[in-house]
Amino acid sequence: MMEATPPSTKKRKTVPAPTTSQPLVTNFFKPTRQDEPRSTGNTEEDVSDDNARVRPDSPELFSSPSPVGMATASSLSVHSSSRGTSSTRSLTSSLSDKAPPWSGSPLNELCFGPCSYPILPPLVPSPHHSILFRPRLTPGSLPQPYPDRFRDVWDQYHVRMPCSSKSEYPLDDGRLVSRWDLIKQALSRTIANVHDFEEALLSYNSHYAKRWGFKGLYVYFDEICSEEERDVFFKQLLPRIVSLALSLPDIVTHAVPLLKKQQDYSITLSQQQIACLLANAFLCTFPRRNTIQRSSEYASYPFINFNTLFTANARKSISQDRENKLRCLFHYFTRVTAKMPWGVVTFERQVLKDPPHWESSSTLLTKLHVISEGSIEDKGHGMLQVDFANKYLGGGVLNRGCVQEEIRFLICPELLASLLFTEELDDNESLLMTGSERFSNYTGYASSFEWAGTHRDETTRDSWARIQTKVVAIDALKFSSIGAQYRPDTIRRELNKAYCGFMDGPYTSSCGQSMAVATGNWGCGAFRGDPRLKSVLQLMAASEAKRDVVYFTFGDERLQTDIASLHALITRNKVTVGQMWSALVRYSSYRTRRDRPSLHSYLHTTLGAPPAVIATTQPTNTV
Image (tube, rainbow, N blue to C red; front, side, top):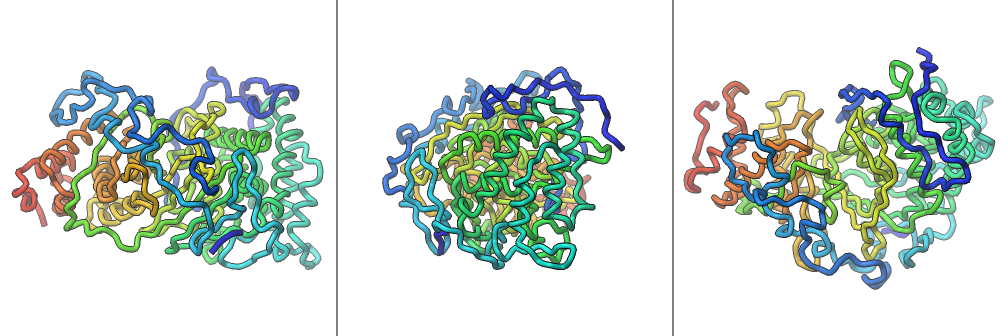
């Protein structure tokens, strides 16, 4: 490292798997047929619980994006409209006619895309940045791990690696043996079915033999997959995953540093190193990462071993979303074991040590483009894309959850590596992930989530060989009482959290501006946040960070209109972030929900007043 009941016997319909003569990489595990009845209602399994742990020297070395300049609307495939700038529509206007797909500023007036990409210095290690490969990169060639041979590190500052000589395992007779030797022995045997797979994994995790369940995998391969698909997995794909995992001491030659609380620190790994780490996670080889005891060493880290994905639900079956989580991950391993990608990914823990003084801020709002169609990952290219995160990264991605964060981690599985080394986020922290590749398409959401085939990510790479996709994880508060989110202390916390994610990095862009934020209903849904409040808070934080905003309402046209009309009123009246803070604090003083008007109408009334009146307007029924 360079650093400073028994399952039903009725089989589901499936599309036959390809024969072995067909390319494994493009055909493995096709989605189930659309004529199969599916439940689309939301269930408990849809919810991600907040407490679940569930350079090269020349910038021209790699393919460059299009010439510097403002991005255009066409670059995001967003439909424009002659009514698209009518952001001042009346609050009471009818929505009987279909609203235009977007409101606010046209995309070509916002800063995103090539002009906003940071100009990077040469890739070198520093006291706050570890690089686990030699940074002299050649396009198309796999980075060379550093150091050249495995350097054994076993301490509280690094991931405890499965291949460490310090990782020992007790046998029944009391003797301690090398756990890595047990792993190699178990995985080197022929694994022809789920029973063999279960037996192999439990041989080096025997303490959990009565706690881990593999019923979900039995159902998946016995009831859902065809015989051809089973053969492809056990005869072709699984041996490749095993080979990749057992190459750990040759590919990741130094223990990965932990991204611990309150430490600004970055880790850059090659995509090959990430694939190797995830292969080990799939085979559940990471030591000390399986216990749920609060006093355990990794209690403040997410789970990383994949055993929780192999279980069945209370009906001893497997839900659609879990089935398709497996499809996404199997597809990822199919792709990377057929042709390993050669780029790198950076994970950067960001700590906000000096938050803005919201009360006295004189900052005006930046530009806003709000759209009811599309998603952040599909239409947020060239922007800072927000991950609506759990404080334990990934949320329920390896368990029951399948909403925004979980889906993003499934279609871009390299993000899963963050679960290995990122301690839970504090209130003043975020995680910026740069360079993750997208491997899958999908349809649906939550319980209706479904893998929809391969995705070819054609995003250009930066001079560090990273795909130019930036995803920032910020975790919102979960409210047991809806009214609690309007308190000044919670408003301040959410503002600081959003700002921590949006604040600018150390490198400037060619145009001197920061790329726009692509976000949406952060912390809403299961966490019970008010979308109108969250949109206002994110606008305030982004403006303080000098970033434009592209806001996705995910099909909610009324919300699109409300956000755009409020933004237009605020910018027209030149209302500052400090004045918006004061208005929100006054709104919080309403005694009860019955007394409280809607936030949207309150802000329209308050912030629509003349500037001299805005600072003194008070609610009529306050404490």
